[in-house]
Length: 206
Length: 206
Image (tube, rainbow over all chains, first blue to last red):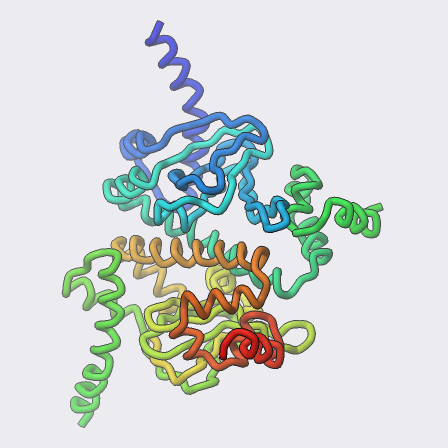
């Protein structure tokens, strides 16, 4: 019986691990034997819609890789409103990087927007993985490099685009993303009320 | 004569390379022989105050490491005002990462705030360096990881702190930095007029 459960578990885990392996191989090569070892550093989790993976005030222990679904990161501002700062779809990584590196309590929440399947790794495991498989340094170097470049562009837009312009640019550049995320979360990302976003939509989308 | 010049050049280059080596060794170990090879991928440059290393519309070809001095990155907004988005002091890296990775024209300027000494590397050389010395993947992984974590915090502050609060926090956390940067550039970083920054200073610093 136990053997059957393990077999079923490994059957379920295989497709999600394939997605992860394909993502690694966008940046570097790993052999079958290496990947067999690499995957042992990760755990998997199914997350329900609106379930929190991280809550404000809790030590940020994990780094999350979205296999399927959609996560968001937000904080609660001084008016008690949820301000979303990041989303993560399939093959994106998400954590509170500062709190994760320093193993300190986070100021953020990480929550599933849709029912999601994720891989995750602890800080200690990530360090051991990088020591045991230096090839993964290259993978994570690319992950952080691209995430950093995107964050720099975001900062420029926060200074140079109005919220309306930023929304219209998002529709142009990432239409499938804007369609997938509920409107009230788009508003939360832009720092708008849902009512004001609805006005913008009426003005531009007919 | 030529030999004497080469000797003098290598004498001048050595202290700055030591700073770079020490910085690498904060994250990973390199042998003397490895470092002898690694340093060949870099060039050095003295930059005058207010000299531009990168200008808007030009392809972003280099990644800069500050050995001595202070650089800033800015763009010119639709009102014609310079909006500073980043500073880099000793041992910090700076470039327009998105334009650098994709070898495309930049929307930014990179300029020396003080007379500065820098090491720099081209995109092609950085790629070759990482292939030849995978140990440098670990170094750059840390560089990008920390820069990304800092950018994520910056984004949170842009949403949650007023410009006044952000300035006061900077004085508390980085007093030596705030003292070193001219006031009009602090204003340019905060997105304030120098006059308004001067009012804030009068209110809080007596």
